[in-house]
Image 1 (cartoon, rainbow, N blue to C red):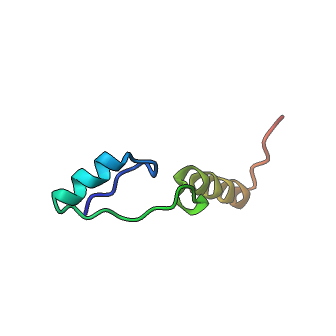
Image 2 (cartoon, rainbow, N blue to C red):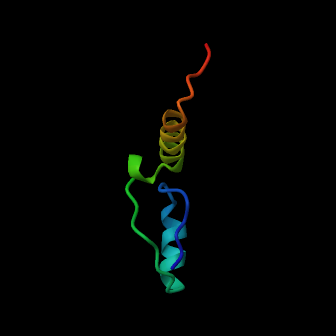
Image 3 (cartoon, helix red, strand yellow):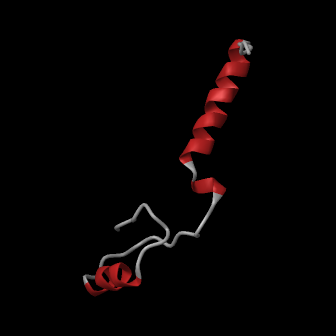
Length: 57
């Protein structure tokens, strides 16, 4: 299975992959669930709260 990282891929690329019988994973154009940065900030925020750290502004 080939999973390309960008959801906006040119038709010529998807046609090429199809001709080579390479399976691709369907991906929505934009999905917050697929944003690893959002998940990373959530993990860091939970860890910060757990240790009781209050940021200094």
